[in-house]
Length: 193
Image (cartoon, rainbow, N blue to C red; front, side):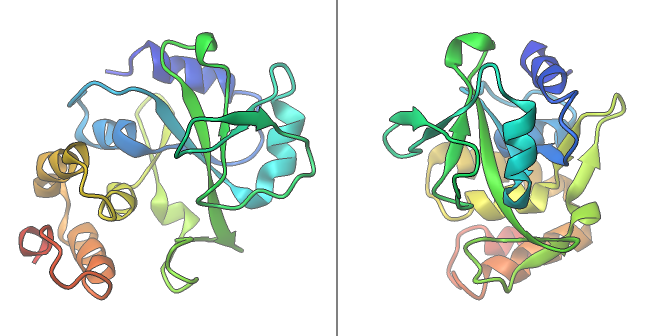
């Protein structure tokens, strides 16, 4: 089920000593154990605190900083502070079958922190980590869907509708409990209740 691009990402990160996760739509595909839709890129989540490891591992080519809204890219200098959320690192698009982007996660000790939750939404790193039978780490679906819940893009709604029934009660409750306080009328809540 892992297409060429995911195997290329695993090879790219083979020498990376930090934790990483396939994120976004591909993570939901790995959770569902099938390719559910076409993807335009691959998002890889790393901890922002590990940027020095990213800089030491990926030297040729070095990723650039990409504005996720415009796609504009600029050089990234190791040691430069980047923030979870607005800052994305991008590898040259022609290296892989699909563009590979590094998104940054906030963390505190052994906890992942949702950068939009003012530090109040967190989960142990071990709980956010799922792994395929052949060793590809990917982000737990409730976290991917939490990120996607902020958008009203049709693909995000389709992703939710396609995967929500496969969430166990614990994942379903966690997602519900972290969407409802901020968006009490969110259209996904009835399916999660």
